[in-house]
Amino acid sequence: MSNEDDRRHVSTLIWGYAASHIIGVSTRWRVFDRIGDTERDGAELAHDLDLPAGPLTRLLRAAAALGLLAEATPGRFRLTPTGALLRADQPNSLFDMAKMLTDPLLTDGWARLDASVRTGETAFAGIFGTDFFEHISENPELNEIFRSGMTSSTANVAPGLAAACDYGRFGTVVDVGGGSGLMLARILAANPDTRGVLFDTPAGLAGAPGVLAEAEVADRCTIVTGDFFREVPSGADAYLLKTIVHDWDDEPAAAILATCRKAIPDHGRLLIADRTLPETVDPTRSSLPYMMDLNMMVNYGGRERTRSDVERLCATAGFRVVDEHFAQGTDFTIIEAVPVPNG
Image (cartoon, rainbow, N blue to C red; front, side, top):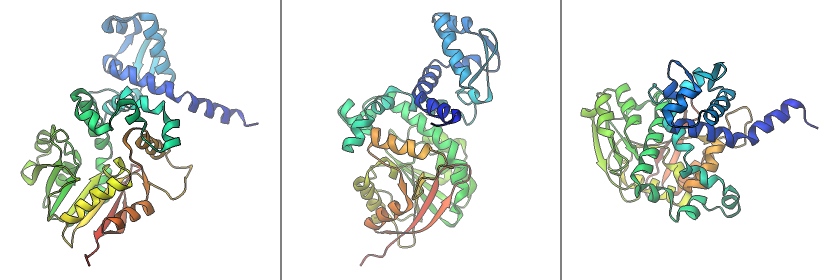
């Protein structure tokens, strides 16, 4: 029989879905912003939200039990430093990421995890009748939730990724599928002699001009729209794919890399920034990459990969892996590859 600590740990894992829903509802109602730097009574918050006071107070107490709030006196709550991370108005906030990952758009698929494991197919397509990216492209509100969530996620890892690799050796860096440009802006700000090309779909690039202007790098960055399955800007010194390859299973991922291979010069570098899994599970490291791996299977049809997985994928597209850079403070690495000469 396991000891009491083991039992508590397993019980906490079992109830993990409840914690996600508590965070999701509280985030959508902006509870953490409404409390802010003050102390608020549950009944006051209920009045602001036009909700019954009793049930809302129960929700707030559950959030306090998770360490997101502190109940100072019966029925009165203030934010903890942990809960403050879910305020939308704070630097490095997790608000947008929490809103995205707890939205039914993604959580509904997890209810069919067994089907995805049994078949290897995405549960998302079975629920919505199309793949994830096609679905959100037809729904501006969902697309904005996803875009904001990805921008938030990038903001949290961009400092580590920008410092992990010597981008100053490149004259031009193409950020393939670079979205709002936050990652590329960080790279250009740290490397004043480097120019950038931000490449994505028109919807993916929403907000990019403002991000680049705010970082004061807009004069060194060209924005190009397109489809990375068809063509990417050619002739650059480096092609960065941050959280792009993991969105896709091997065949479409290899197709994206093959598109980059057509565009890259012989001296160029391919930089794949993703959560690289160890060859065997290390229980001392974060479990997040494995949760993300299952999320990719359930909702996107993609996967997280080990270095050897990435090496095989690169080889099919005409690249050879030559280095791996670890991003401090994150669970990301940048795998660097060079084009294999044709013929």
